[in-house]
Length: 66
Image 1 (cartoon, rainbow, N blue to C red):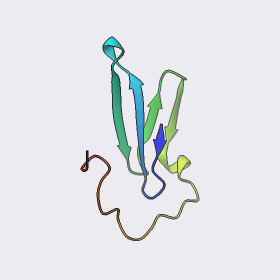
Image 2 (image 1 turned 45 degrees about the vertical axis):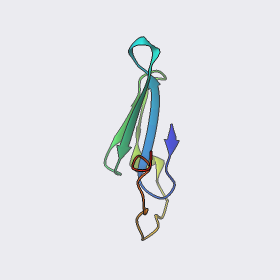
Image 3 (image 1 turned 180 degrees about the vertical axis):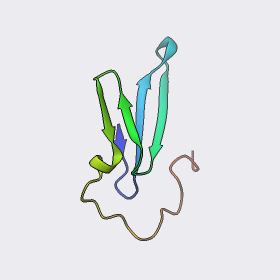
């Protein structure tokens, strides 16, 4: 899991069919991240509790430049 510090967004990598990596992007404080391999579900609102985000948005989304 990679937690973006400047916006409510996490990227989760997991193994899918054939052991290929599957990338899931979850955005927004009202969403949750399911991690069945370790038996937990995390609310983004809890992950980011107490975090103040910058007022300006990021100039380029992470997946636009790749």
